[in-house]
Amino acid sequence: MNSKNLVIAGVLGASLVAHPTVAQSQEIDRELYQLCTQFPLNSRCANFNIPIPLDARQGEGAVCGFNNGKKRQSGKCKIVTTEQGFTLYIEEGKELDFLDNKRGTAVVNLPLERVFAMNYRQWNRIHRFELGFLIQSEPERANRTNFVEILSHEKLAKSLTNQLKMPPISPEMLSMAKVRGETTESALDPSTLVKQLSEKKECVRCNLQGANLSSADLKGINLEGANLAGANLQGAKLEGAYLVGANLDKANLTEANLKGVNLALGSMQEAVLQNADLSAANLQGASLLRANLQGAKLSAPTMLQNADLSNANLKNANFEGAMLAFANLEGADLQGADLGDTSVKLSGIPGNYSRGEMALDAFGTALSILTGNLGGIAAFNSRERPVKFDTNLQGANLKNANLTGVDLEDASLVDANLSGANLTNAKLEGTDLTGANLCGATMPNGSRGNQGC
Image (tube, rainbow, N blue to C red):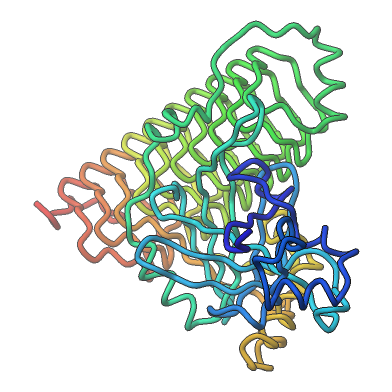
């Protein structure tokens, strides 16, 4: 069997056809390996997947991690970019004596047409990409989405950035893939339900509509596509949870811990998120129409690209350094909100964001080995060295938004629509308003804006 058809079993799960992993070759001796390398059509090699070490693969070196809400795996990898997408070679399994104590590699082919979320951040000299993509699955309750994280050097980052200019998959595409579950009656009583969620940490596309989960410990739980409309999650602990495509319309998430949660393309229309902590959360493409986020924390590296925050209550919310490019904030109330710049230490970011501090430590060494850049170790391992983030509102729609007293220091509002917005007493020191539409906006000094009229 051609090793190029391999996927990472247990990490991508049922994403494609699950083939035997390299780890299953532990009991294969050197003689069989050499035989199958030279004569792959030999009958003894019919079910033998030839393990190939990373240094024998083509591509640029990086560190890759996968997260589908069930299992996380990260390691050294190489990436090849093509017009159709990416091929990732990632180390897996144990060191093999017949490979001179090297690990084999699995292969993941990632076509661009299956990518629905793309995020990019730079940590000093280290570049971080996160790609969400659709996967194929047979079991009814198996994941249908996955995320791959790529930590790279500058050369590979340029190649990936050029490749990722294609538009992401629309929410309609996710609906067609049936990521979100259909509403059905739950057969479990509330106490049994809470116990099952706490123990199994998984309930993919299940119906939890109206469930009482206040103060529940649901850290790291996989709730992809689940129906949580109207649920009571006040004070719930959801740090690092996987809620891609979940329905949380009108749910109560007051003071909930949502650090590092993945809610890409989720729906939280009219949800109550007062004083909730969403730092480092992924809300790309999420719908927060008329949601109450008063006093919520959404500071860097929170991602809100293409999110719908129209008519939302964002009073006194903290958006320092957040990514809000192309978000819709039309009619939103941002009075007293903080959208200025901020500095973040790697050690202060929720572990799920970059697979924990152990992975962060290993990355500097791994990247240096792959690129020959020994300076990379010091650049990455200085986790106490702060990284400065400017709030990104490029192309955002802030038409008629209330920005009274908002701190926008050093924020990017390039090509943003601020027509009719109220910027009374707003702080605009260092704010980039290139191409912004300020027609009819009330400026900090009380004058009427005419830029873009």
